[in-house]
Length: 287
Length: 137
Image (tube, rainbow over all chains, first blue to last red; front, side, top):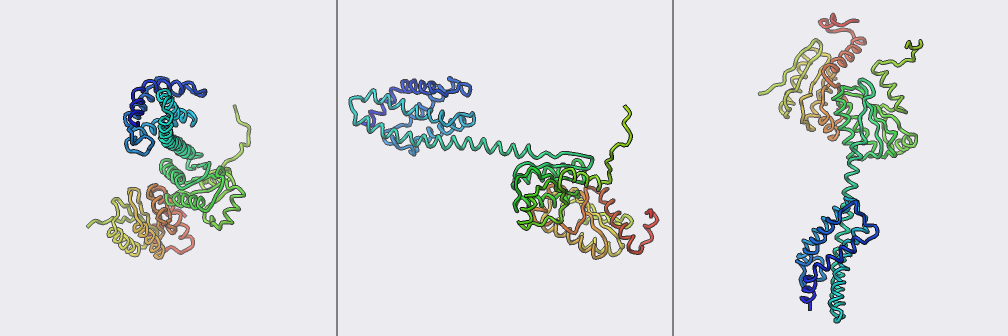
């Protein structure tokens, strides 16, 4: 009986494909900005061909069978690419489940006289497609996560600019949480900038850091120590009152680090140590 | 056998490390330098490591040792021109070189040394005549 089903399916490949594409394009939220119908046609055709080519009587109902590796791989690629294109999970699941429905529809029309056989075949196919759905979802989510990780990297790259506020003075406003990876980027950027500009003072402004724990404090102290090794001085500014409280409660010793309340104060301190003076003009400017 | 030259500039000694330091060489440098300080009564030591790109904990310790030993012999040590990667490595190794003065380049290092030694000279009596005439106080 099994071979019968498989033969039926293989013979009606074009009908299945047609039905499947119809369901896909009729989904309400189908968004033809993201993918062209031509592409859908190609992807579907390829997937069905791979599925039917590897379908045998034994592996019907067993999604883990090694014969289906090709199908699983094709599905994974597809759902990753769809996740990156910004498809919703619903659209991706409609895509996979649509194939199952199309196949069962065909079986139903051909095996209408043998309900027992139809039931057995549908059950197995359901199993099979459940495991395909799981694969699709896993890879869909992995695809999304990749997107998130990439964005996180980008954010940490762009959010650590080193600003030259004056000749010999660098400022580095840190915004967002400081973790080890980011501290590394911050430290490298700062040290490179010190060498490049020959600056002797670096101001590390942490008013944009939401919380400081012992790890973040340690990262900050490392950065300060590395700056000192380079022969420059490092000033930390913008410590908010609650952060100052946390630091003392945690028992972190910042006494050998120069700290200033705000960036303005830090800048004033830098001017002093570079022996610069900022004055208000006494006489009106001649224009 | 390779040797790192120690140059005398008035009251200061200038050491430029142009090769990657291996352990033996570093130990010899330490011994030579301390001996030269004692022989010449130097007031300051400037070590330029701007071309050193590889550093390990041993090398970090040697630099720290040189600074402490010079301090005992009444000479200040300034390390200049450390590369960012080297600085990060030393920090990660837990060697912040607390006793060592640092400067960005040789010029700034010399300024720093002059400032340090000048201050010392105000407090202590002058024991070296040769370099006094070129200073203005």
